[in-house]
Amino acid sequence: MDLVPALARWLHFLAGVMWIGLLYYFNFVQVPALKAAAADGTAAGITKHVAPRALLYFRWSAVVTWLAGAAILGSNFIGAFTLQKGLAGIGIGAWLGTIMLFNVWALIWPNQQKILGLTPATDEEKNKARRVALLASRTNMMLSIPMLFFMAGGWSHRALFGL
Amino acid sequence: MKNPLDSIWGTIICGLILTVILYIAVKNFLM
Image 1 (cartoon, rainbow over the protein chains, first blue to last red):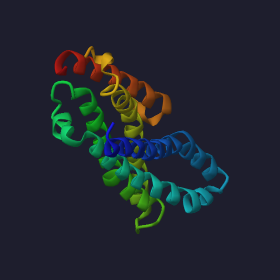
Image 2 (cartoon, each protein chain N blue to C red; image 1 turned 135 degrees about the vertical axis):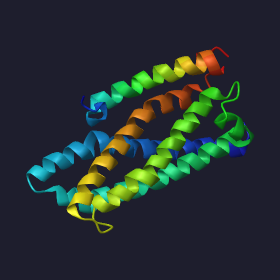
Image 3 (cartoon, each protein chain N blue to C red; image 1 turned 30 degrees about the horizontal axis):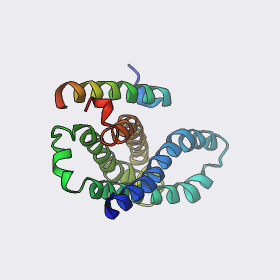
């Protein structure tokens, strides 16, 4: 194995674990915790001290994961994204990961900035932002399931696809 | 109809269904 793809794969896994780990943290832990915390008036601890830090690592680990993934694909980058024969499995994984990266930067982060008061927003705008951010986050959680299947099985375990 | 993404389990089930659909599509039409 060449050094660059090996290091890129290592980095892809490290950053990917952080990205998807934080995605699952938001969906499995923080969302229900905020609901309970809002009921007893302790949500500020999470929204002020935890959420901004989690979002910082979340959105940047998404970028690192994508870039390292692109480096692993190397000369197969175009072939994967155009779903060429033999690369369609990893290509589907790459497309799902790319859609998820878009959701992070175009939907989740801008709306979380409004929710957390990092950018000015009216109460009505905050309520709308909460809905959009939740659905974008849940969409990413849903997409992570086939994404990980195709990432894990799309290239290195081609037997799954009869290759 | 309730949005399945409003619940964790709805989200997981949607993800599993999407995995099966994409797997069948890739195996039959793209490989």
